[in-house]
Length: 186
Image (cartoon, rainbow, N blue to C red; front, side, top):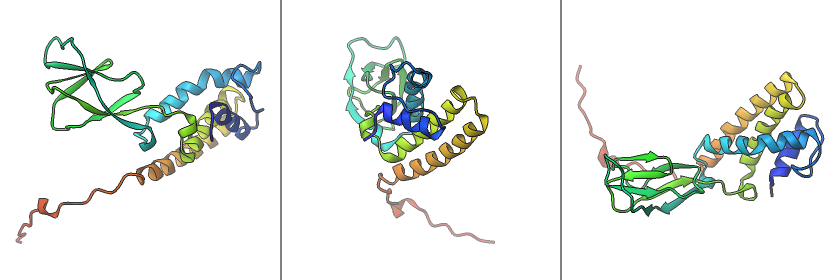
């Protein structure tokens, strides 16, 4: 089970630095991890709609209405990192700050959240460790060759992680009634 500290410690070990026991340790490693970890984690989460980080919500309709263009406003929950989509893709909507504007009376959305390190699958933990190692190789060690090694390793791990993550979604079946047969003549 991963934690923010275990992820950072693994990244530090990968680059040949000392592990940390807390972000408040009086070491350069702990200070850098404290400064860099949250934004790095958030950026990696937001790079892809990871299945483990998606949630579905019914959005609360706000009393205030948009100034123009739409009749209703809905509140995006504070835990949402981003809105992936809405239930009815045929409708027109816009995202403004922490609200979705639409002409619908009810709104369901798929949002991306941070479920927390203890719920990250191992393929994502490894990608995050490699990303932290890439950043720490430069910021802590000043070692460009290690940085490049972990950049490449991280890219490979991200490809693998995305592939594994996509397999947790069933494959959509084709409705062969949607295909038209055409007669091709020379």
